[in-house]
Image 1 (tube, helix red, strand yellow):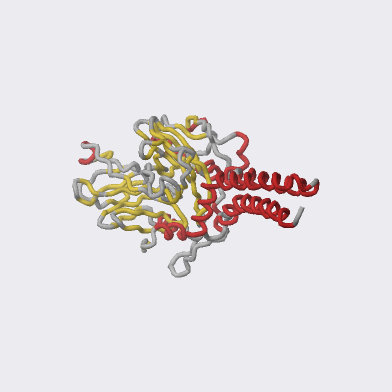
Image 2 (cartoon, rainbow over the protein chains, first blue to last red):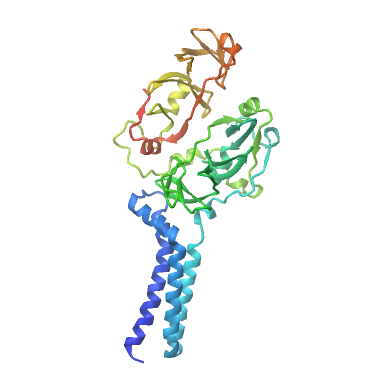
Length: 162
Length: 227
């Protein structure tokens, strides 16, 4: 085995790992709190989020090819390529987690009650909306945590945001 | 609050990002990204589309019950009551801001009621609304009345009836009176006594956005400040 065949598998594996890590890190880094997001960096972060699955597919294939190339070269090379494959898959899997929904859990099945049964004091604030004959109040204290709620009031599909 | 049916599709939104201390949402159906504060799509196949705003008000539970006796209130999730805070604003006030507002008259975290109507935007400081609960103003040639019911309970109306601007002043805690007809108007913006009451006139509501000054100004760069 010459160094010219060793290098491609190392490069392929590292390239795959780099793509997966960039897919994981770029949106988190750009959209971390308490810093401004410039238009270009935001566009890049959103692009990575949108096309992340394709980037990860490419990275996975690359890492797979690296393993195949390393296989005839003995145990050490096999182990090295497999470690890079596993790390690539790991970074890819982590990048599929929506950290914003981990911090602020969504409310997929909202429940409602009459105001008197809500347990809220008279001076608690709600975001009030009326659609036709139906009115709903979304307590500010609840929405300030969940931030986004998909709801129907009558036949109208609403998204409540705070 | 936004209607989430657009171009024939009903979208399901998720919290998905931050843009200068404003949240971004992503919809499941098209994977596009939407600015929560403006309803605008900024990336993805729906880019350029804008959600229709649905009029909403911040009201106390007491006021909500009075106006909508059959109204329903969203319940918090039982496991998360620890995450719900009623007095979170003092904590938020101390957080840093990332948008430079040093060239303007207000501090970045000044709480303002933002109004955009008639092609113009104006910010009304919360402290000003507290000391002056009824304000008659004109914005982009639209005569408006701002009526603060205490705290963040604020309603704004286009005060034109039959093309003429009403001159409204407080009559009692619950009502305004217009100078010309002497009709009484309640907090819903509807005439409840006097000549306008018999024709059941209600003034059209104008949307209000409670926001921090830095954020309001970022999205309304030409905004003025009510003085």
